[in-house]
Image (cartoon, rainbow, N blue to C red; front, side):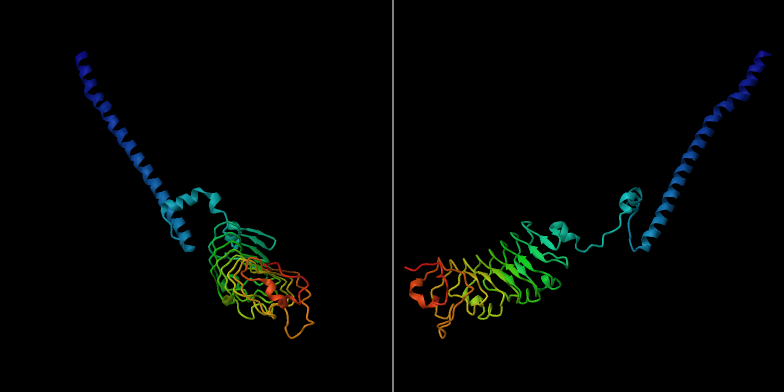
Length: 293
């Protein structure tokens, strides 16, 4: 009897116990698959929603880019700048109408804020000055390009700068002078390669405010003509000047003429004996600095 009960027990319950694990495993597999499917659907829906938003703005980005944007709210919420002067004022120093771009190895004149009055761009690698560099900047009063590599200045580059009073082109590679603005008081072109043929006959005649003219250490063969009466300081040292006439500084047809404002003329370092041209200085209050014997 006991043997029949044992046999009945094994026959009924053992198959039930052995069949349980496959059912649990199958259920577990279904759950994991369902989770992956659900997450995939959410990601796809999120991507499609973001893609629609981005397409409205005319932007096309990948899923990875979209997700990175979603995960970095701090970058996404920063508004874009509309300051068109920002690049120049990051490269240079902009302060109260003055722009300082010194010793930063720029090769061209940077775009300037429209209110710029003073530009200091010394000791760079600028080779050329174009008309467009200052076309919209009419407020400039002082420009300093000393210590660059300027070889060419387009005609009219400074013609619209009606307020410009001081211009320095010293220590460059110029062989001729540009047309200068009318209100200039100081012009410095020391240490270039300028020859007399690179200066027009009336280059300084109409500059009635010009007081300081520096043309030392060039290749001039003669003193520039038609120097304005306003001139106080004239530097022509270390050129190749060999001749001076009675009309260079004075007026040969007017013996009473005196150049009252001229305080200093430097002509040392030129291959000329000034003592041979005494009449050329008769209208001056002081003799030029140079070689007399």
